[in-house]
Image (cartoon, helix red, strand yellow):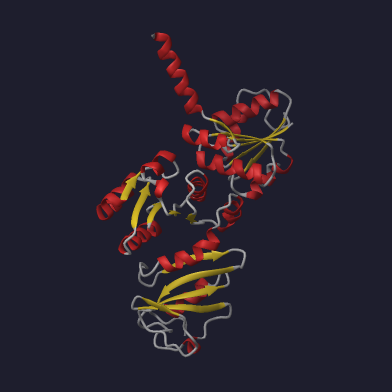
Length: 223
Length: 141
């Protein structure tokens, strides 16, 4: 599959790495010269410098033959327009746009760009372990459903490590939906024991992150 | 006619003033409160005294657009310094608020062309500068 990624921030770079690892052909476009040079050291010819919202930059990257265009810059306008031209001008059926500000979701929909539908599935599958230690990755806000999905790494002496899902007793409005262990993901039941080093995906009511993180952090504040 | 102008830089503020002088009702939205000064500059009265409206906010915030009166706008002009902001907000004005007269400034000639084909009225200063330079060159033989 040939994938064009616009925006070499943390998400874009990690997506590129992962897709390349999985034998896809990838071009990562970055408009900031300094950032491009950093990324280019690792990705070499897979990185291109330019404003990914400009048509000639997309064409230089070969957008006409792209199977998938992913727009993950920090600018919602940019992400929207990249996907819009990808779809409408270059007839690329599959696009994924990152929504930085959930309030802009309505604009994505207005332009016929639906990150919620396709992104949920794809991004969850694509982002794996590139998470800083104890870091929290805000994967997705499901605006309409009023839910959020986050990913956390379970630290060794945290409250959750070594306990079953039932024993962890997370606050109402949160649910562990998946555990990633040794590169494999599975859906836990109440008996599943959470291990240190696991990465857990949780679905939350909005605003609960801060009360959830302590359960998985080293000092065991979740007790 | 009620004209809403998003982006009161040199272009937006000048267009706002001439629309006002032509007797239109004019509202201006800009994210920088200081850009109001450009509206007052060179005028006898303040922008508000002349009947102008000014709101502070970013173009993509629906609340800001509403505060600036988008719901009753007959014409919408997108003239911020960002092509992508202009193209996005112009499409919001056209599609969400059903404004038929939408004019948008797009510096990038390629996209000005493509979006023109898609039914947006785009003005590309870059394109016009290129044509003018070319005309000068031709004249010089």
